[in-house]
Amino acid sequence: MSELLVFISSMMDARKDDLSEEREVAKRAIKSIGLTTPWRFEDSPASSQRVDYAYLNKVAEADIFLLILAIGITGPVRMEYDAAINAEKPKLVFLKQTDNRTPELQSFIDSIDVKWKEFSNAKELEAEIISAISEELINAHRQQKVDLAPQDVEKLQDLRIDVKIHHESPTSDRGIATSRQSAGVNLGAEAQIRGGNVAGRDQHFTNIRKAGRDYYEAHDSSQINITQGSPVEDVLKLFDDMKAAIDELDMPPHDRKRVQYSIDGAKIEAENDPPNKNAVAERLKEAANIIKNATNLAVETTSFGKLLIKGLAWVGKTFGWLAL
Image 1 (cartoon, helix red, strand yellow):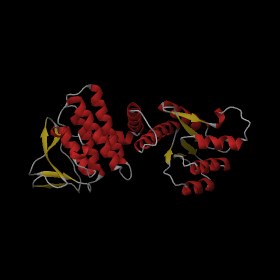
Image 2: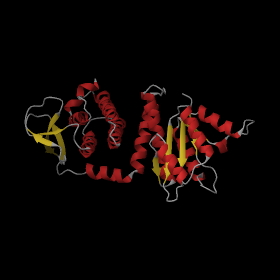
Image 3: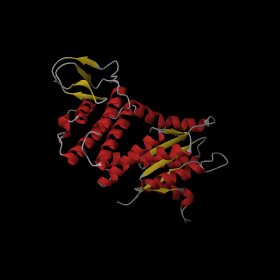
């Protein structure tokens, strides 16, 4: 597949709004993905076309339109954004934190129809761009708008997860701290402990302690129930438990890492506001298929599999949906 073109848009008048560093970072981030190439006005060759035609035509040719904003906005930037709308291009907007934003820019921000992402420094912007483009390409592939090879999809998934882990330390620290807890499971106010048979769409599991870890096994009494109404915090803790349970599976290190990436991806999707439950289910399916292909285990009989079934219950799916 030829590289996809990403058009970089922003103010270029350093006297009014110096975004030269951010434009360099955007260029580097887009190149680092490996499947995309950046287009910036300052890198383009001399042309006989009028200046406005040259860059607006490039918006129409691009696969993704990337906009960086900070203090203000100019007419050419607005024209580029309008051209992206008219050409129905995916639009990724990044907004630099500042206390002196102009009313014109604030009005523009209030009017746009896409979710923009705020950043505070160049390092943060780089991470956000890599994550956003990776997500955009994965979604385009799922919708059959872009044809990606399986290894490219896996690379994008790994990029997105690595960026999230390395650059969002509060979330990562919370996950690490949670995964190290072994004194029981806090299932929150909406988790219910109840007796009865395992039946219906809700999945029920017994909480037992073994070797300093929490496990869940299907049982017909003293059961813990996580349903679609359970708080997101419950399922985030569940994903941490799943990662701990991976260590017990007899798998090659590479496959174990792939399973970990899938679970990290499910956790990221669950942290969205609102949670992307279909994407969570897809990542759980990936994890189950990797285990099945690498070990020939009946996944549902493992401690990991029983946790996985709970995750599927949270997104409103059943284990049979995996079609293993």
